[in-house]
Length: 143
Image 1: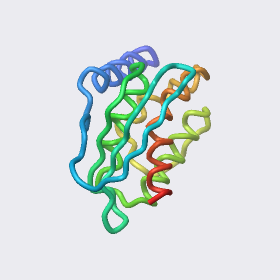
Image 2: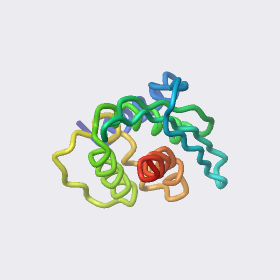
Image 3: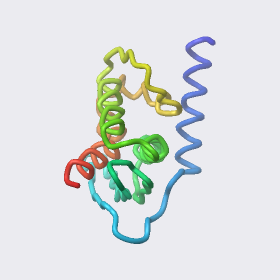
Image 4: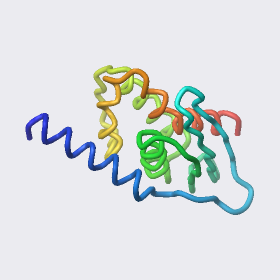
């Protein structure tokens, strides 16, 4: 597949997550809740996670912001559900390295998250893409 076609496909995946976010909403009950914002861009997120026995049983978010931040939150919540906390943190580390433009060689299945790799070419947008991931890291480390 040519770079242009791949770029178009990635844009479509990002826009699909933006227009049809997965895991948007709130979790009832006693859950980890983290509120974060990106003052540079105006993005804000409220991330909720239900963590039991070291495993992310559920994750949902609410917020507002650009297509990159909201798409990334949608993708991240999908990716971490069912993962243990260490796996979620490892995935966040891989994502952060990808956002810095580093070559990421991992056996980890990233799925739709790979569509965000082009963000690394736009330094001002990296904080948008990593906002939900930083919220997840903060939440599980405070647990």
